[in-house]
Image (tube, rainbow, N blue to C red; front, side, top):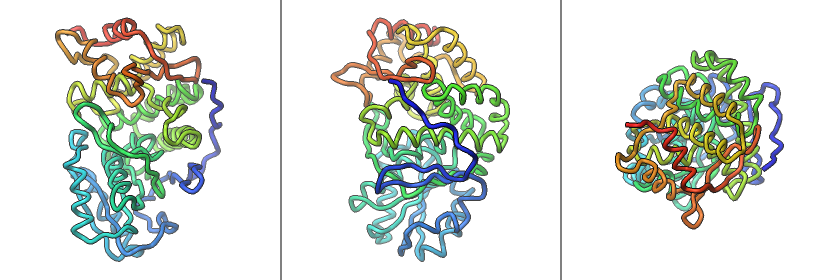
Length: 376
């Protein structure tokens, strides 16, 4: 799949997502989320709901509420438990309960204040409540800013598969306040870097080279480095989503590393590994599969592995079964949105800065899993 990706643009505060009547902007910068001017172009209505979690709400919920008070006379809040393991129907119902108990109508605007779990569930609630109400993404983690808040994927997990229940539903706006990244635990920062790194091998090797040169600065939360990393990641994702909003083809390449990664998350139990940790390790496995399929050389596999390791991410997969580890991975990967007729489809590096979705013989996948996973 040869794709001409957009060139990195000059520094600015917004990245547009062009989806005709569903188009919107990603605002990137400091001191954004609690500035009333950030939300000036949003529709005014009688009520809004801030959805956050037990970690983020004490830090930022009151500040967001203050910024919104001039626009929304009635602002309600709901605080969800924090963690991937709570991305469930039961937690989703807490949002619906709050909306219904407060008599919220179909013009109520939902604000997702938190990481990827909060964003995914708020978006799914917005898509479902009264068959669709508007919402705004206010991501506070690096992973959410560069990936999950952009593009309209919403949903919850099922015990048998990650993100298998959901909807495509675009927000009115995405507000990436870089200052919120300064409060992230280091493990969460590393998890976000996995989604930054993925854009290099599949879309922009110059960006990968830039990340390699500045990985220490990114790990140290250098504001200028984070600003460029977020902006370039959003530029690439915005372009892909603009071409293929509902993942009919091209957009699937953004799942590089995710097929293996989702198996790790489901196999260990949601929340044991962070999503970005599983994706980082999954990218190593997907790179090895790409090499064994003859699509890339061993040097690129090694280069990517070293970068992922420097980002503080695992590069060795866990054992999901003592009896047949590879078999358990294969079983879990068959429950994947890209699977067709029970055949697993993998996103592989298909040459420098190029990706494709391909199938692979089970025997070859087993070799990769055996190579990349812990022996005991």
